[in-house]
Image (cartoon, rainbow, N blue to C red; front, side):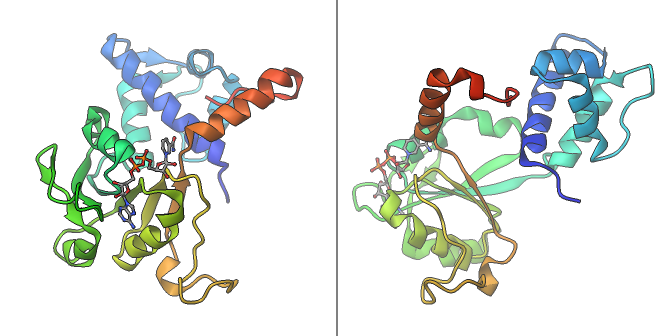
Length: 227
Ligand code: NAD
């Protein structure tokens, strides 16, 4: 069965809440408590968790470390993820220098760019490589995810380079829609083999600003808050 994307976003929120509770030495929680902290209904919490199993005891709620461990497992955060950043301009540098990713086992293993001013720079102990070195790099180092932080007009080609190099997930920061097709077969409806199983997630704070503008002007059209 398909699981709504919003449910996965909420699991990430529940995990963050559980981490916070654990830091405060709170050992038990309930769907009511999680719901209140996440700004959703208790029914929603139970429904979201039920997609993945039965984690609590009826009437007893949840044990914080156990539910946390289970969500970590469900989200795949109990293994390490090797990440490359493609595009080491303002955003790529900021992402690479942001420490939060290492809370879980997200490891920046490679940084790539095409600009002579950037290639060869040291960032966080890594030397920025040239995009032409990406295929060889990924042959020697398994890479799970690529972060795309290139100008929008370069994003499709850079995404193709990542997919050709075997990367299975792309976090796309460029404000453009990545097309899951081989570059040499534009317009083709079927997905080329190398794109099969590749997941693209988009992150765009400007899109968030546009949604915000709309909802400030049309607050009555807003559905339940998405955490
Ligand atoms: P920037 O110009 O500072 O950096 C872009 C970098 O990409 C440069 O270093 C350039 O040499 C490199 N590059 C160009 N073509 C490349 C290629 N084919 N392969 C590898 N590297 C290549 O730009 P920026 O401000 O860092 O923004 C980067 C992207 O992120 C843009 O698409 C921008 O619109 C987007 N952006 C998104 C968000 C967000 O919330 N998602 C926020 C800010 C910027």
